[in-house]
Image (cartoon, rainbow, N blue to C red; front, side, top):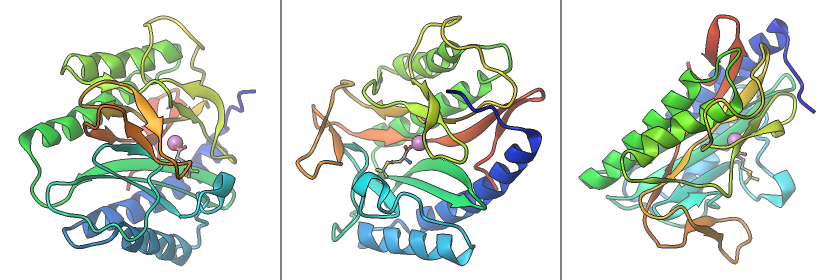
Amino acid sequence: MIRLKSDADIEHMRVSGVKLAEVLHYVGGLVAPGVTTGELDHAAELHIRECGAKPILLHYMGYPASLCVSVNEQVIHGIPGRRVLKAGDIVSLDLSLSYDGYCADSTITVACGAVSVEDQHLIETTRRGLSAGIDAACVGSRLGDVGHAIQQVVESEGMSVVRDFVGHGIGRELHEDPEVPNYGKAGTGMLLKEGLVIAIEPMVNAGSSAVRILDDGWTVVTVDGRKSAHFEHTVAVTAQGPLVLTQP
Ligand code: MF3
Ligand code: CO
């Protein structure tokens, strides 16, 4: 069931989104050689609570932290802990919160110290893929247009889009309908209506799109061991065009 949002709902979600953007930007700035992934999680939780919001990933389906930290070949859902980051790592930070009952969801991938030109290119391509997907999220377009736009950017750089995990609708719940694939055929799929709010979140692998889940039950990694990047924004489809809610 699709729950379209009113202008008032979207205004609430923007407030949540701005808070999330600020926390995520802050935590991204902490990424450096020698820092542990657990320290990033603690900083995220502290700052979420300080701004009066709730860390909704904590205990979500049993997930044990407030932040997902996925390093290098880890695609998504990496569990923060004692791992010490080192120069050359690429680090995906996926964070969700709710404020006043409204959720926001966003992800960035940041370089830890100096990273290779290839890894920088992977990060930039993923960011561009997200940006193309956002641009396609207009009233009257279709979900396949969003996925297609992302897929075009990624595959034209010889990289691959993860297919086993997708974006999602978002509102009072973190995960609402519809599913939002990061691949697709232009002109196909659900028609985008004013008031639809979706989390668009391309996960991009340098090599093959195949992924698997580690024995911890959460961490998704590339099968070929090559690196992966992830960007995500919460986006409202409005009469004035796509509105990114998770930016300052
Ligand atoms: N922010 C993630 C998403 O886009 C949530 C990860 S689910 C968790 O859906 F349970 F691992 F936290
Ligand atoms: Co999401």
